[in-house]
Length: 300
Image (cartoon, rainbow, N blue to C red; front, side, top):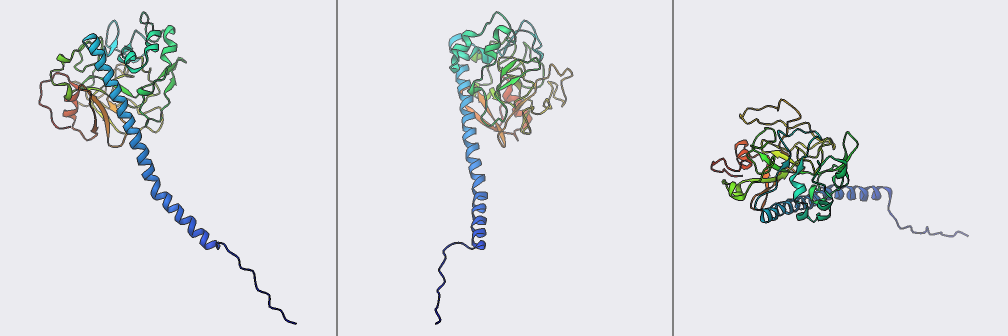
């Protein structure tokens, strides 16, 4: 007797259908990933801008208390060399109470230099407001001498071109400077006070008033470093206006730089923060770094 046996029905995907679904998911991920990355970078860029606003506000609060801006760096004499010798207390040290770091300021021993072992504990502190979230560099590094140092990706403007850090610079934060707002005759809204810079594995940290915390407006470097070591010293423009490098590498400072695409954040003297395009003309950028050149400001 013949019997018809019905095959049981099976629900599921065929291999081809499964591959099609996987391909569709992969395409969707590929389409969405750039948008997610852009959103994350937008958030980091906003946080970076907020950091600069806080640092700018700290400078303003310092000025209200002492009737002048903090010194860019404190030392017996100049020019300032990029080596751990001397006092070298940076402008950041003096605004610590104004960025919610009063305890660190109290522990800082101003009777000795920032490289003295007495200041080793404070020097190793990491301060979130001092670092751009887009930076891939660690917030603490180790010097050639084995000391731990907290880093920063922000620097004060000491001059409009590549010259050593000294007492006669034309920016607002330089050697033993005590600039008052009335000294900024070009207008505080037309003068850079602070800007972004690349992290540097050889940096002496946020306490050091060297190229670690001071830069000039000779250039905006947008060539993102491949690693924490960062780029070599940035090609600069000497005071005479001719392209070149400082003859003594220990006196070379360099310009500003950014991890953001297309430009760099700068805090102006009026407390505002501007994202300035890397395509800005060299002449206008130099004007922004000079507190009293008496020239009409172009667009930026």
